[in-house]
Length: 291
Ligand code: G4P
Image (cartoon, rainbow, N blue to C red; front, side, top):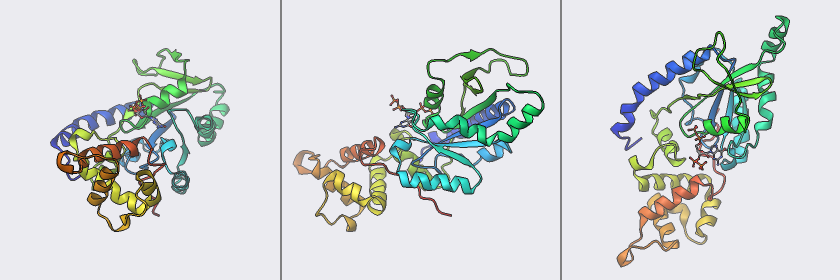
């Protein structure tokens, strides 16, 4: 990211090593990994090291926040993961939409394993799962939604590391209550921008106007109609404007003026990002499938 600060870089190695170790330790306790990603940025919200970390452990990807993502693009992303041999599901962990299918999907992924358990006489063996994902992607929301009010935790048991607590989701599924936190990788500047657009990175460390202008350039290319109608820009030659010019136009439309009639582009930038993050601008996906 252009203006990545030293704070970003400092936390990375120590936190990441610790987080990875934690995931590695929990790995042997679970049958499947639930990776939660942001449906608006399915690539930028993944940590590419996860696959090395989990080795051959089965995985299901949840495209969360699908209530704010472009429906057609989400369907394309689900096809994309399928092509890669990964089962995925579009969900909204705030309302619980899509989660009904979750358990049957997991059973499908683990069907061979479940058969093998049965052959070994483990008829009532529960499926154990752990949740992983980057900060703010919806890990806690998912766990809360799945466990509902029945946060009945099973006690420590032989073979399970002391201190590990589980949520009993149903009579056949348990989820480790501590999700594995992974940090995104900022190597590609586009990834940094996508994370910032969606609010996964704190605004304090970012140049808000630069962000807004970049977002406007993207919207101009991919969601032109949404941009025009939200800010009533019809009749203005937006297609040939720069991100900065568009931001000024939006500030003007919303009456964001400083003394002397100067347009308050900083205020306009804050508003634009707020409206994008709350999906007032529409259901928008920032990353397209490229095969
Ligand atoms: P984390 O554990 O991975 O860090 O994420 P967490 O569940 O705390 O979720 C981070 C934010 O994302 C929360 O908003 C949460 O409500 C929101 N969120 C999670 N899943 C979804 C979803 O599917 N759709 C939408 N629209 N939002 C989702 P917050 O602003 O931090 O809190 P609040 O709005 O819940 O008060």
